[in-house]
Image 1 (cartoon, rainbow over the protein chains, first blue to last red):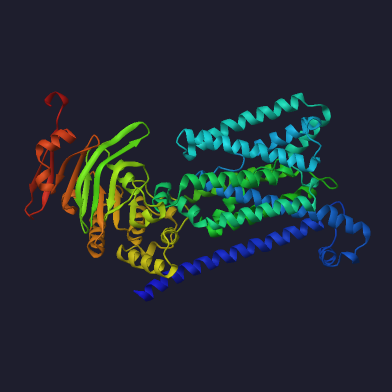
Image 2: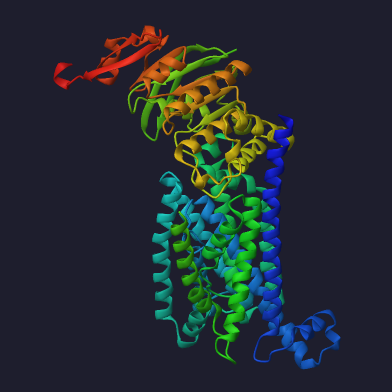
Amino acid sequence: MTGAALSLAAQYRRHNRWRLILLAALMLALLTSFAADLATGSANYPLREVFAGLVAPSALDAGMRVILFDVRLPYALMALAVGGALGLAGAQLQTVLNNPLASPFTLGIAAASTLGAALVIVFAHHLPPIPHDILLPLGAFVCAVAVTALVLLLGRAHGGGSDTLVLFGIALLFALEALVWLLQFLADANALEQIVFWSMGNLGRATLTHVALVAGVLLLCFIMAMRRAWALTLLRGGAAQAEALGIRVARLNAQVLVEVSLLTAVALAFVGTIGFVGLVGPHIARLLVGEQHRFFLPASVLCGALMLSLASLASKSIIPGLIVPIGIVTALVGVPVLITLILTRRSAS
Amino acid sequence: MSLMLNDVRVARGKAHIIAGLSLPPLPPGSMTALIGPNGAGKSTLIHALAGLLPARGSIRLHGQALETQPAAERSRRVGLLPQTLPQAVGLTVYELLLGGLLTLGLARDEAEQRIERVLGELRLAGLALRALATLSGGQRQLVALAQLLASEPELLLLDEPNSALDLHWQLAMIEAIRADVARRGAIAVLALHDINLALRSCERVIVLHRGACVADGAPQTVLDPALLAQVYGVAARIETCSQGQPVFILDRLIRPDEV
């Protein structure tokens, strides 16, 4: 009996070793994409030169140093941090809502961030004299948290089921979009341009300080998510069974929703609206490593980061000399990827 | 040392489903069937015993009040096999069981040994690394049973545990539960629709009707035609077959104008 027990446990460990290899492969792909993102732009640099510059900045000429450290490094790092944050947010939302189509956009959290940013842009003159760089993300964050709280309260008043939450979220999504349109209608030409540009998604506004903030929040939320990885895993088996095992499902859902609103708001506050990464990233991760969340969560972070890094690369390569807003690229690439995933899954089942 | 229910009341929203249920003690090593028509309150009672629904009154397991115990402690003592099957997801059988046992606070070594033993006993070892999404409904119900047995609770609650199982596995499931209950002195309560299975597997049957207990005792004694007509609206009887086994025989529906 003991030998057989070891045998099953050993089989499971071997199964997990494959998952670790896949995670390592994702990490390698991510590093490659990151390096290519650094090397690509209006002036292309050889990878060797980029690496040498990163190791010894003083050896670079002044022009390349500015391009590499002030422009491309924040841009490429921001793609990783925002992609990772959206991947983690989408993965957890899909689990707690038991809905494979859930993403930060489903519950209106992303739309709330856009509304918060639009409010700051339009009413900037009436707000306290706080730097725009702080006020804009703050507005996005406050709105995202407020809408999450509203969805949770409405959901709790009507039983708190995941379907109820999704329905309220979708209803709020339409209302929030209408409010953004109203603000656009009322805004002057300058504010309107800013809102439109924000809603297209753009990594070009990123600084290393912004990157540090998004990466810090991502790290914090990732640690918290990994601490409840088994609870989230069991939730996939069924809410009633998870509850009977002592998991407080309602509390878990609320914790995840608040954390997702934080991740989404902070990620989108500096770069604007970026869709599909939070939806498609977790799907790819699920196909690769399954739904044991100790592997699924890191894989979702890596897939989200890789998707946005590749989108960043594409945004600089589609039209030479011009950076296409990354939100446009993720939507254009994300839709066919999503359709392919759905068709693949349907034919597999 | 038993499960005791005294004046238990359970509501779902504003609807009072169980109203003042009191039962003689359910002793260790026993298997009790909860039967009754749809809406009688079987699942509600099972959920209340498992702590998934708030209950008023007194529920005591081996002398300790369950309703005041912390959720983590209660989930170690009371295990549930819910009516809903584990979802068809990309999660392997092994990790579903492992996650459950680790969440209950078991050390990893002990959890691995229990999983091996239970999957071996239920002949599910070959499915250990299969994703739940690739299993049939019956296999997923057996996985849920494996999860329940592996957690070794003092009180096993099973809500229609045979709904997705074929005849072979229905009997195999009952044998596995009986062996577990006998080995550990646990108490099993099964909500069942299949009266033949209740007759065959349980030494005691509690008949619920509109949230109240209308009969309680040995199945062959309690399940008389009058009670079956009153509770289910059918003409039915219990006979003894040539093998000496009690068999439930359903004769016909009783029309409302016959009542």
